[in-house]
Image (cartoon, rainbow, N blue to C red; front, side):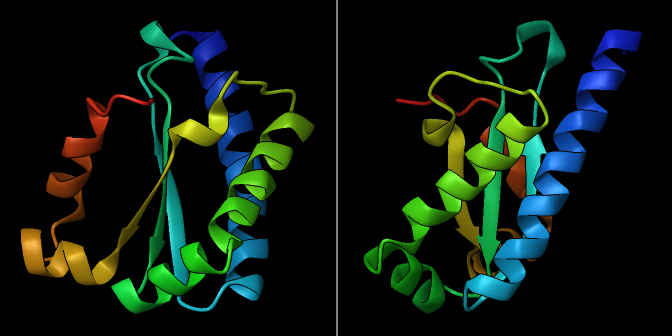
Length: 121
């Protein structure tokens, strides 16, 4: 990783940590978030994954438009750290602990591999 990549990674982590701390207080069932990025293809390779505890809480968040609010929160936090990614809301994905347990036996490393090649539309 180049020095500039490390600096960018630190800024992304700072922004997402702030977003995560706020989301934990605001959204029922929200658990954590993470990101995947290949800095050789940044910003096109950036994916942000927001994880809820179960499908029911995720559905409630999406149906109550809280999913869109969470995307705005993340976008604002990234922007406040001078990370402006065009169309970042399309790069924010949702998942659940429940789905990972059912489909990958709780192995998040394996599950997140699927997101590395995600196409954002």
